[in-house]
Length: 163
Image (cartoon, rainbow, N blue to C red):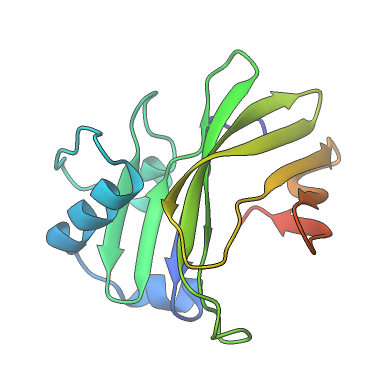
């Protein structure tokens, strides 16, 4: 935590392995994905970037790339005043292939090591799914690890590591 952004990756398989095999992003796929995630937002193509630089877009900007089987978005923004915006996304994984793809926007706060996010609007809502709220905390000894609670029906806790 404490970084001004994060990285969201949708993948049909092992993320590091898939990213090692991709070439130039598919611009049409990328534009379609961004229009779905940011309806009404201004979408413009920009010069390519490497993953390291693309993780920290300027305020109000989201960097993205899409290939068959892999979508990457740098879009979790810390506004510097204790408020943050994020996108929560889920998708089928090899261990749970029947889960549909879906995503929703979130807004919240990051204060004193506690990240609180509330769902604000669906971006892509599969049938019979509800948006959830999250609250997690991190320890300064392990700032890349977040543990927390998912607030929603039949939900419990989560644990995440930044990689």
